[in-house]
Amino acid sequence: MNHLSNSRYNLDHFGTSSPASEIERPRPLAGGPPRNDETQSRAVGKALQRLLLRPLYQLYEIRLQRQVCIQPPPRHVGIILDGNRRYARKYGATDPHQIYALGAKKLDDVLEWCCELHIPAVTLWAVSTDNLSRRSAAEVSGILAAIETKLAALAQDPRIHQQRVRVKAAGRLELLPAPTVAAIRAAEEATATYDDGLALTIAVAYGGHDEITDAVARSCAQRRMTARRSPKPSKQSLLRRSPAISTWPACPIPT
Image 1 (tube, helix red, strand yellow):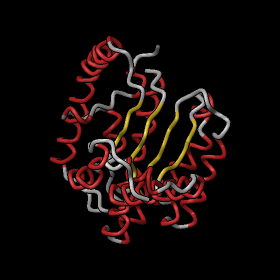
Image 2 (cartoon, rainbow, N blue to C red):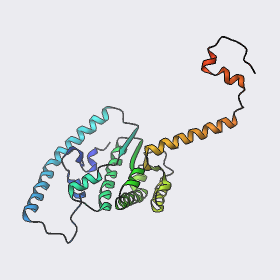
Image 3 (cartoon, rainbow, N blue to C red):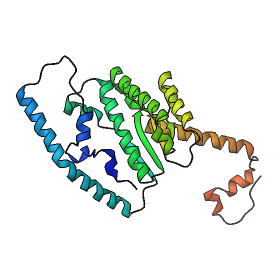
Image 4 (cartoon, rainbow, N blue to C red):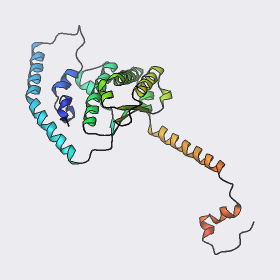
């Protein structure tokens, strides 16, 4: 198995930025105000710090991999794609499309890690129905654009086909715009024949309330179907199945 360090030492969640994450951070737009000498010196100092920390990250990732491999790998990993706006505020990004595109880039590393660890199923909780209804139009547009771009890339990525990753979508797709649905269907069709690799489920337009409502509706529909197929019970059988009556002494049941 290759070391997890193949994924460019991105360990931002431990509080220190890696070299790769600095490359992926939002950059000032062309034509913006020039950076003064103090700012440039600070940037050079941070770059040197990251360079010196790189060997430490390599050792840490090797140690982390050994700890993970002690136990059997999980059968299913679920990831909530959150924190894009906090990351953007920290580094001064304001364009919603840029914000969510940066978050989508991290998916490449995550899938690589999961494939290396032979995890058979990964679910990404991408956007909920609450997100679609409560966020601003600009934010929703940025989220959906990032999803469409990432799905198009997954459908054509040689690594996805080499590792036989099967892409599926879950959620109320009827709430999504046509371009997003088309990108989903294209990724699903491009990987539909892969049934022996990682199963990647992308949850879009999902919601706990909607899932409960849909589950109750399916259960009621199944009960109605069963009731139609089953013979109508007699009055005697209904009375005998009553918890209260079943505890009575044996006696004739009136008809």
